[in-house]
Length: 155
Image 1 (cartoon, rainbow, N blue to C red):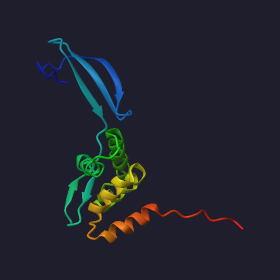
Image 2 (image 1 turned 90 degrees about the horizontal axis):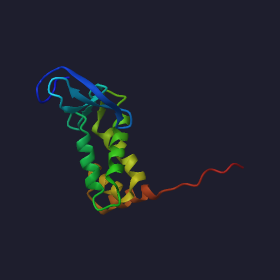
Image 3 (image 1 turned 180 degrees about the vertical axis):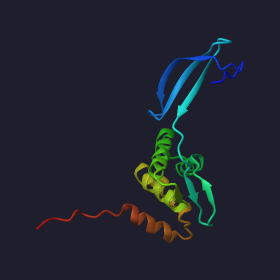
Image 4 (image 1 turned 30 degrees about the horizontal axis):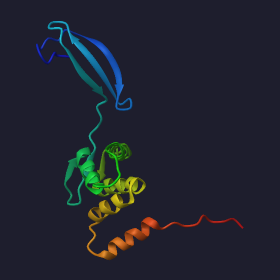
């Protein structure tokens, strides 16, 4: 590592810890030349996840966009920032097995998890994602949200 203050490559690791649930290693380093300390993070380089848009374009998966959408849907709802971060991580992990996903798959993955997190946030996200145009669209979605079926009984 190159020291951010004096650009020396002579350093030593003072402390190493796992971060972000073991996905990252945080290292405290001390420069051998100037003696200052700095922190580095080591993570596995992952293959990029591409999202195929409805218009046919492609762009890299952006956690910040997913998080912004979920935060907008959960505004003024009893949903914590940690729950939103967990939801975004869960969506990304679920999609990571593929090199390319559609924006539709991303939206459905978010909806699945929002349903369990907060039903009002689910409806808000669904109204934008599914492009609701009429009150009937909300009625239909609420019907799907509240629909429960009795388990089949054996005779």
